[in-house]
Image 1 (cartoon, helix red, strand yellow):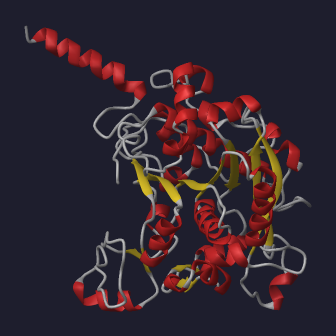
Image 2 (tube, helix red, strand yellow; image 1 turned 120 degrees about the vertical axis):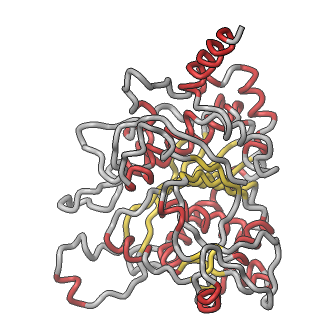
Image 3 (cartoon, rainbow, N blue to C red; image 1 turned 180 degrees about the vertical axis):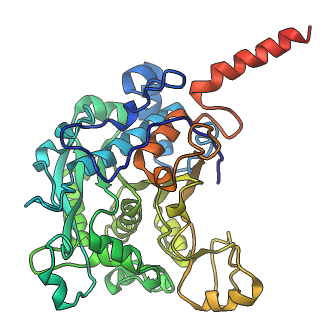
Length: 429
């Protein structure tokens, strides 16, 4: 499902660097006197009735029905939850040490217990329980080690796991929620992994768990490498996720529970892989939902089919002007749930004479999950902004914050449009 939208003005902000002297709240950026809004908060938007609505229907808001009837127009409760998970991703960015000259480069600047408080995203009711690291699997020539250490940094802090512990928040949510949050690309080797765009088969341990019908499921080589690679000093991200999920299930498995995995850019791709891995590894896993922002494509159509069979629910927040959401590879024009090996693929946007070569190459991807499509290009305040700003997490949070529906303006302009319509109506009398 694709939903078009327009946007509102925001100041230009690069999500990769955040000044150490200034902690930025992405939901409080718009200070334009002509065009601004108040960010959504639980106490201002979620009235008592809406709060009860979330607790009663939390599975619908986690995507059990693929968010049917909640995206267009965008339900206010769902909007608030999407923004909440976006703030968890923002905390991952703010916690990461981006300074190559720092002795703690590519690690978390904050202790595990203080990630959420020191990143200034406000009270969440969640408690971080584990740091997560990702390791690059690319084999580098020996001379690289003689260069700056930041060039050859193989393992880096990528995110964290947090468990909801606040009784009031658990009551509001209707269950205990576990968040896994991933940041986007930050290190040189992560960028190199991103460029490994060819599809590769899933590892044997996942195939064996899912079963022989998994045959043909493939994912982007670089993303899989970052998820499954390890080193002598650092276990793989896959191992850390599985270990922590096993602990959570052992501790809270007898109560209503949900896993919400969220990420931006590269983090969105890792969130998709982690969700698939959890559902494939743990037969007793509760509902697993992915809320992704500006994510690239991850796998082929067979991978999409396996995601759907596993019950993994994915809500992709997409800015139609964000180039990252259009890569890697080519997308197929085939909505069938099943695909046989003899079935031809119709590759979108390619002349017929090159389709055969593309279809034979491991570069044919498929979009996954449900899509909430927004757009910043149609906004006069953003039409002159650069390509980079379309991909920033702050842009995505502002788009979600203001979106109403595909055929209705954002909240910030709704009253203005209604006023003009009312004036025209009076003038016709």
